[in-house]
Length: 326
Image (cartoon, rainbow, N blue to C red; front, top):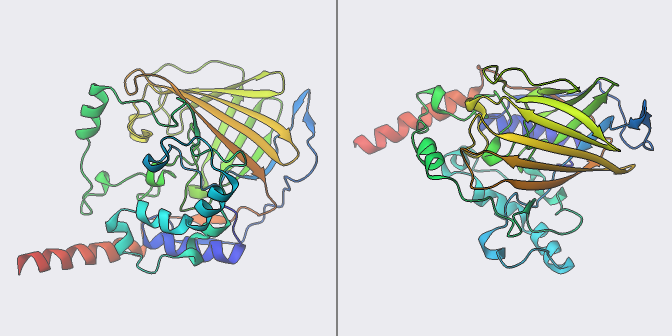
């Protein structure tokens, strides 16, 4: 999402009311991603500030099932109506806590569809949809605890300020899928031995080791374990060792993701991720998302247990119980 500093600070305070953040403050990071591409040792330099914010959805919507690419006119209309479509995706319970949710906070009007005007970020399968889930995955996901505001263990990782996973997005854990409601800003720092990707949302950092092997499967990490290698000018990242707590759209801890980062020009990184999980989907699938250079600095992102939103939604729950008892 490409946003002004003041509006992002305002939106971060509002999203805290939804259980996502409390506040954002000014940043001190002054790295620019607009310089011409350099090289670190013998490899392309990915360092700088980037955003992957887009209105293009992960999967092709039902009403566009026969359309792989927008016309210019259709893309312009899709962008114009982005806010209304976003609001429809917000669960009623969350929307009720933000009745004044509008473009002042979301700045959806600044988001565009991807440059080639695809109607989905998923490029394989060709229908732009995720493959069907296996029966055992459906049963596993049905068995997960239902959302209960009186039991924080049942709330999403995003609501608990643990990871950026709002409404099926994945801020930093592979596959990286943009978030329609928050800050899709990143800083990349690179050395000969590692590449670090830092995300503004929930201030996570993923360190990709160049070379090496994954630890035993019993060692599980919130963001998975990422090992990189170079194939020409493309950084290929292999990630395994997920924890089941950080499942992506119902995935298991056996998910395996192969990402490819290719800097195609001074302002663009082509990002693709191929996902396979033999315990979740009937086949692998691939997503493609462009990262664009930005001069917008990373802002401090704070999210903590004293969030006043907890008080607000508990008050609302008690009022609802009282209403039902009358």
